[in-house]
Amino acid sequence: MKECLECGSTSIRFEKNIRAFICENCGFMITRDEYYKLRDDEKNSRKGKEENSKELYKWLISKKE
Ligand SMILES: [Zn+2]
Image (cartoon, rainbow, N blue to C red; front, side, top):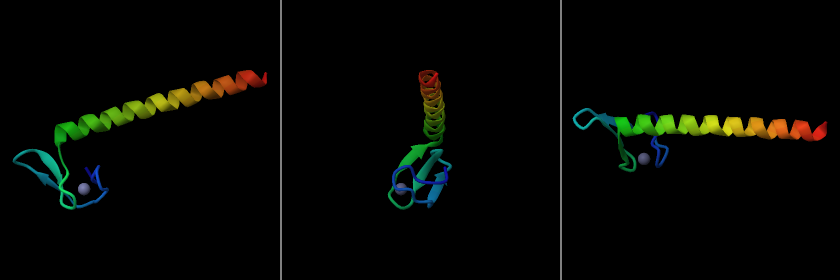
């Protein structure tokens, strides 16, 4: 994790003992597993948005014809 999900700070420390990222600015903590899962979910939702805009584009094109 490069940036804190809560405050955007880049002062992130990885705690090996608990395998978690900790923000040194606001104290936000997330385990590595949770973080990767969250990141994957974000990717998936972004993919969905792209598909939605494609559908919208198709709809706009079909309207013109
Ligand atoms: Zn933070």
